[in-house]
Image (cartoon, rainbow, N blue to C red; front, side, top):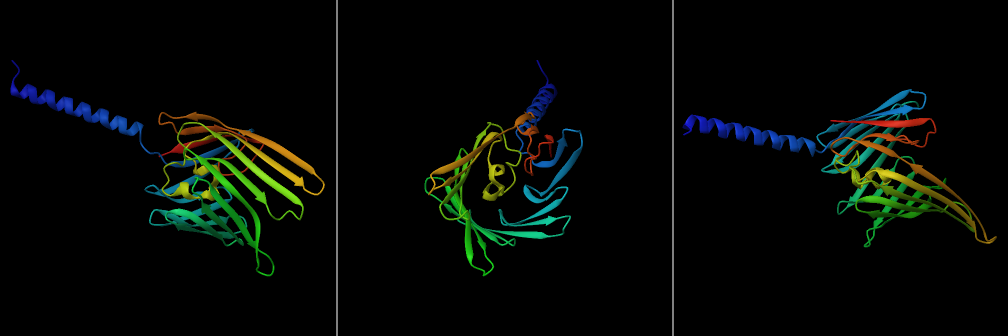
Length: 264
């Protein structure tokens, strides 16, 4: 027969074990925040980007040549300033929302983006600039298509290409089923100007098609560009390495080998 002391001891050990298991599972499923990106070139050289937070609100992105600062109103990102470290030129972006949906971006670099959220889940947009007489001129317009929290297609029509010319740029994206590295940043998924970065999953391939049609001459020119990304993931299904010719927060670079991602 076991004594009361032994029974209490066994129960205590069991509770400690259960708590330990619960904590382990919590760590496995924790919401990670991306803190550092190391871009590695083919020649082995590298450069780092640092991301700072207050809780799950993004504060800044510090790149080699650029520093972006994020400002919140409640849970929404309502302003971003982007400082060019070389020229010291700073662009300010104001984000306007209606019913928690982004409807306008006003840039100090002389453009405005207007967004309309349609009943079918697509988002229509237009980009307006001002000419020398301060008149608004539409430079492009298009539609964003979403599926399962991912931006799967962006169809853009260029409006400043001249009479009788139809110019269209289209991007179609395929995703994995893993967590996007930026998934847990509060309010970030509403920033439609960040394109694929606001998606829930990671893009494994994209096809960019550019076409120009001369209506009066019945002629058309088109070009297609394919991009592929290969990933390594951690035990929480977040990417830790991306092999691609695209830098994570940059454009295409033929000398780029991979991006290494580090979390909290």
